[in-house]
Length: 235
Image (cartoon, rainbow, N blue to C red; front, top):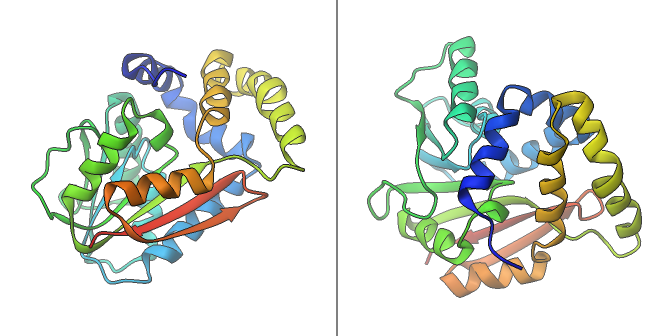
């Protein structure tokens, strides 16, 4: 399979940006709130003062972290789709948050605009599978983490074998039509199904993290292994 085309991915998210949140909540049956809560619980397990949320999109993970961690934590959300970032900045304004403490900037996960050893924690949720070069993206994450810093990946993965027929029936046949009703864009969610079905399974992704240099890689499957949390530590 060829790697995702960055221009096509950006265009896909640009088209659905203003309806992205409502689509996520409805099409996941609200389970996305639970997944983010699990990520925040993992983030709490070690002290951190500076967090980078990659592929931040409309900022849901960044705001979940803001709500669940100390008020002094600095959170930077980075994404390469400006229309999605506009949604995040609107939320920040509604919440009355400091734009310096909670920044949303446009940038490339494959060429992060930060110095080495800049962050205590990096998170990326439902964005790793969209990178044109996943190994390069993971290497960049490793570079900007401080020693003993952690990466938390929340991403779709391959479901348990017994659940797979039901899941892919929904993903490939039902979800695009539901998405068309909610967002008016069926094709964007056809891409979603393709990107998920071609993504590595939990163990394979864990191996990719170890190849880059992450240690103590821990994997937790959620919701019949529809998604998984991967946590790795920089040595």
